[in-house]
Length: 222
Image 1: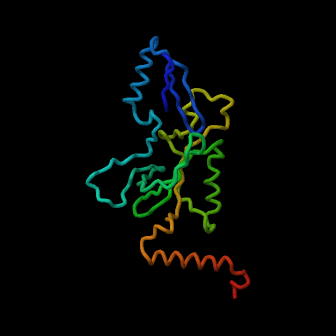
Image 2 (image 1 turned 60 degrees about the horizontal axis):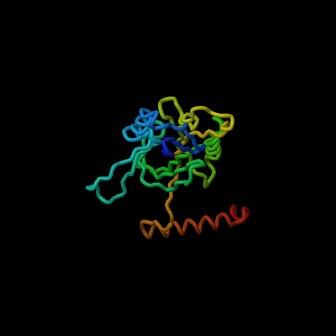
Image 3 (image 1 turned 90 degrees about the vertical axis):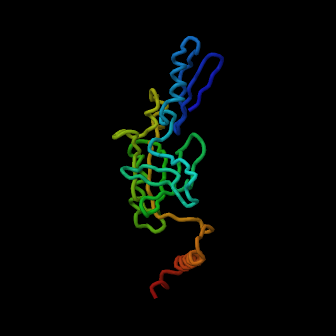
C-alpha cells in the first residue's frame, strides 16, 4: 500500500500479486474528513488493513533469550500453528505467485511450509495439491502433509478479488487464491553439517545412490 499526493489531490494505491488498484483522487481541501479518515486508518488501524497477513505472527525479540535456534514467528495452517524457524526462500516483485518458503516446526517435527498465491479458477487452485497426492510414493518428490486455502475469516478464502471494488472483464482469470502447503522431508545444504559423522554419511549415501542409478537393471537382480 502507498499514498501519493499531487498538488491537493490524494490517491491511495493498493498492490497485490494480481496487479494494482488506485482509488479516485481526493481533494484534501474540499474533503478534509476523507483525508483524516485515510491517515487515521494508516496510523491507528489494524495491521491487516495495511496488507499484513493475520495468520502469520511475529515474535518480538527478547534480549534475555539465549542464542539458540528459536522461532522467529508463527504461521497457521488449518487448525495447526507452526513455529517459523527460518525463511528459506522469498520471491521478489509485485507480480507473480508471491512464494515464500519457511522452515517450520510443530512439536518435535520439522516441516517446509510453502506460502503462495495460485492463479486461476477453484479447480486450478488445487492442481499442485492433486499432483503431489498422485506422486505420493515417488522417490525424490516431497510428501504433502497438509494444505490449506487460507481463510481471512471462517469460511472466507483469501482471494485477490476480495480487495477489488469491482472485477472488470479484463481481470477475469487473473485472480489469485492464497494457498499453503505443508511438506516433508526437510533438508539442509551439505555445508551445514553438524558432525563429521553426518557429513561422511551424506557422502556415502550420494555415492551409493549414484551406483544404484548407474547399474543396469539386469545386474541389479543378480
